[in-house]
Amino acid sequence: MKLRYLHLIHRWLGIGLGLFVLLWFLSGLVMLFVAYPQLTQAERLNRLDSLQLQQVKLSAAQAWVLTGKLGQPESVRLAMRGHRPTYYFLQHGQWLAIWADANNVAPDESIPDESIQVSKAEAINVAEQYQGHAKATEALLLDHDQWSISSSLNGHRPLYRVALDDADATELYVSSHTGEVVLDTQGAERAWNWLGSVIHWVYFTPLRMERELWRQVVLWLAFAGVALASLGLWLGVQRIRINRRYSNDRVTPYRGWARWHQIVGLSAGVFCITWLFSGWLSLTPFGWFSDRALRAEETERWAGGTPNVQDMRLPASAFATRMTGTDIKEIEWLKFAGNTYILAKAAEQESLVDCQSGVPVAGFSAAILQAQAAKLVLHTQIASAHWLTSGDLYFNQDAQKTPRVLRVAFADALNTTFYIDARTSKILASQDSYSRTYRWLFNGLHRIDIPPLGDRLLARRIAIFLLSAGGVLLTLAGIVLGWRRVRRKWPQRVAAGNRQY
Image (cartoon, rainbow, N blue to C red; front, side, top):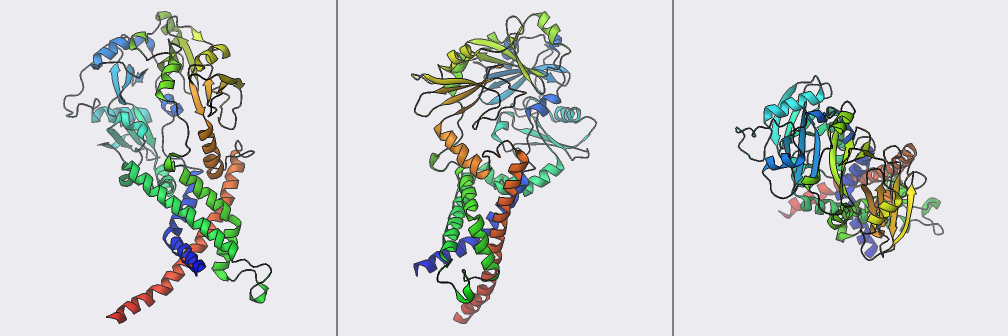
């Protein structure tokens, strides 16, 4: 009797969730080839004019005074906006922009919202220049839409969405605070994402706007999927008879679609369970495993203090002369071990410059990096420090962009490890025992990022496709069985209900 109830639970879970699970598998395959829309660092820098430092008339400190803000900015950048150098300041999660050529004007007074520093006409102009010869067909001021939900854009909201008449049906999102293009999407990209990321993450704007509600919905859907697959595998094994076979010497009592459902389930069931489980785990249920992010106190210890705009200087004119005509697109000030440096950014590479002399910094030695890293984890000794040239299982290293990465591991209970770019002093990643476990449970089980497939993209895609094909066949057979069951039982129940009256 109890076994019958388990079969009923599996059947009705399948009827309710089968389509969801099928769409998860299919949309996951789409995501292998089309990512969610984003503007990468290389794309953003490529579209900027080369930085013309000889046009800069104001220091970062002088420009900061013009913002009228108190305290210190958390981040400061200098780049060209159109053909004029512009300072970009980040404070309390909001970006601000000030012209660096001393020709500053007040924000457009026709715009009622004080947080908006860029007019609609300016946003259209920025978008048209960014995209070349394309012309704007529409410009809307909005807070969020389907493609601009990411929290990384919060400091630029509201955004201007500018539609262009180019062949790709491009839409650009322009910050109302700084006039920068912060996101781009193309028509084909948006269409494929409706079949990929949107379905896979249940990324529908009204639901996604309520972050915790969205998380709970996806969390419980995924959990129910794990229960469905686990119960199905157990029942499939339970119905197999090797010694006391069914009639006609069959090992299974099923025929047709039910037989295929059992056979594929026995073959692909373990993958379906682990894949659904790892997807469920990505939502950090009960605060379990997740990626490790740098804590605020770790960032401050590494910097050797809080940033101060007074220290964010541009060196003498010799530096500007040397930089003019190069492909430097943006500079950013960063602090390391109590000293302030200039990080000069090209489209594909970054280099460090001494803030006082303007002399490029070739890189930092292991001894200097270790001495500062020792302050990251208090009262704990460094267990090991090694140079990496091709990354490891927990860090993907681009040898061209970051040829020298120092891995510093501590002897604490969590085996905390930091990966440091010796050329720029940036901490590129950090790991502990929880995040390493998460790496195997999510990247390993969900993305099949396991040796030897991890760095072989084509082989990994083939493996994912074959495994997902098993999930698709399994859920498709289940949907057919569920539909037949509902179609057969529903008229009977309706008739029975009518007889009661």
